[in-house]
Length: 323
Image 1: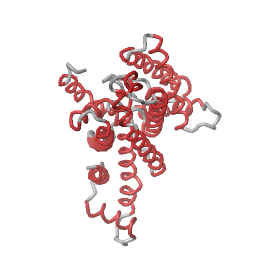
Image 2: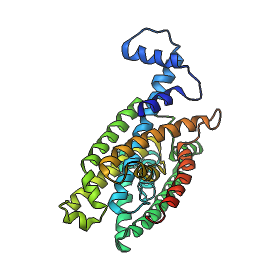
Image 3: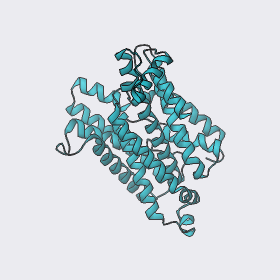
Image 4: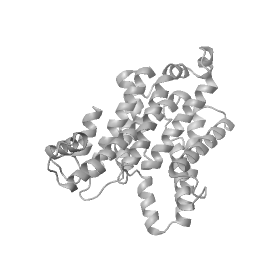
């Protein structure tokens, strides 16, 4: 499924390319076959669409895994990086580094996004604990944190960005894969693979957290260490993906729920299923974003919201007694 989705992402786009051309480009690059291919078509396939599809796969897998982890740790069906303010914090950190020059050039875009995501999660966790420490309080604190960091992002843009910068940043914050290239693949893919391996390693611990932190401790799970590792890898994945493609919602919220209905709640199956489904879903959303309006690329976050909001409504209705 993933290979077919990546191949579809390479073939389908604003400029239609025949399958023979795509196959010839792959043969030339991988095996030096020597097929006669237009250099423009070769550049579209290898330098634009293929890295774009690979980054979309990595981001989709990372965001879906983040949703799985957060929903297991806080035992709330609405937990995901977007709703808990992690995505908003990562976006604010990335914008602060880009526009305001925070860090004096020592911080890159990914480092700024990671710092913002970490700060957002810490503030949300502290607010939730002060409000009582329940999962409902955490979600409400996440909503407040999202609004705060979104407001900070808007303030940074209004204060320091010119009109062209503001337009580009706002488009990026809605989710934009147009600018990704091979160096971005070397960042997105290892991050997603690392997150997948760590989540799969702690699959049984997440099963225990489904019954609460107290039950997990009674079953021998080192609660604080596992929480620190999983929250750290979630923050890392979210920050990395946001720094590359902007803030994309609903992937970490809808995909884990959909996969639970397919493979069940055990995380040994849920983790790989969610990673695969998230990757395929975001590649498909990217394809739709290129075709929805002829001659224009729609922000991918708009497409995921158009699909994710009705999908999540159906999940809520189907599971209203359990949620």
